[in-house]
Amino acid sequence: MIRFGVIGTNKITEMFLEGANELSEFTLAAVYSRTEEKAKEFALKHGAEATFTSLEEMATSDVIDAVYIASPNSLHAEQSIIFMNAGKHVLCEKPMASNKAEVTTMIEAAKKNGVLLMEAMKSTVMPNMQMVRENLHKIGKIRRFVANYGQYSSRYDAYKEGTVLNAFNPEFSNGSLMDIGVYGVYPVVSMLGKPNSIKAEGVMLDSGVDGEGSILLGYDDQEAVIMYSKITDSHMPSEIQGENGSILIDKIGSPMNVTIQYRDGSVEDLSQPQQHTMMYEAKEFIQLIQSDKKESYINSHENSLHSIEVMDEVRKQIGVVFPADHR
Picture 1: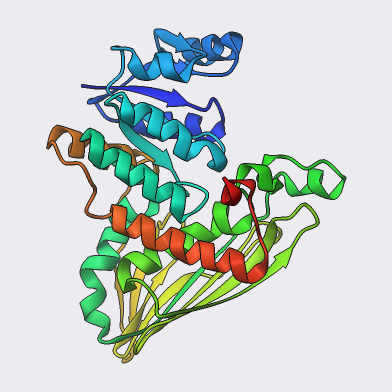
Picture 2: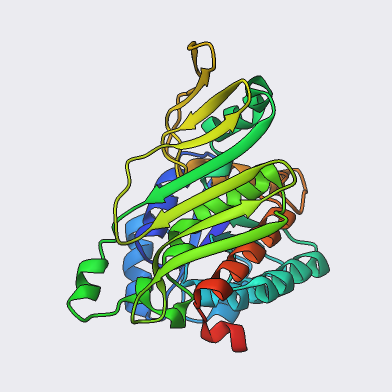
């Protein structure tokens, strides 16, 4: 049994707990919130016995083995390091941190303290994405990866009315690239590797973050096109194009249907039955702890570093700057 603490009493934490509770090895032991009232309310709802309003007290307590961090992006690095320095394993929501400098310090802290650090990128550890990786050879030489994810933000209406919520606030290292674009960047980089060149375009909002954008990644004999948005919906699938056929992925952020369409017109369905989309990241993380491994092969430190390097360069090109970049 792995005893978890959670940081963040938000919708994403609720969804994570829905998935993680499907695992017999998972138990929620503690909840952190800045206010005691909110911590106790969330703990009561989800069956946790301990509550904390101090990160340091929670990190050094003996009631948890690991922590799931779902706070604003700008807080990920600092909070993760507090827990790793106390010997706790960390599952940190995507994106891992604000920039490469922060991700690097997190990885260094993990290695120094001999603990597991994993980015909670759910899609890459789901069975359907595993099927993509296992069947890539069938489409021959890969030439292009088109990753597409557009999801109109529920907070964009408030933004248009003059209220800048966290999702569109650069103080929290947010915006379309960080929240949505990462779902395209991470699998592309994990499958094709670190690109040789990066070209980016984006639509900037007055708050200082991007509303949508596009990235072209160049490789020796391949390319990747990544499109993302928080101000429009998109219904196009993502596609890995090979010389013998293409793999179609219905939703790059949580693949439910995956097919190969061969050049001869035949179609092969690779789709697997799946449980709650956020169960698999918890499962991967717990299995790594139980195997005494300090890094995921899929959501590896290298993949997290290469992804944030791409996003740093994209932000530089389109003009998104976070306060965290000056720390």
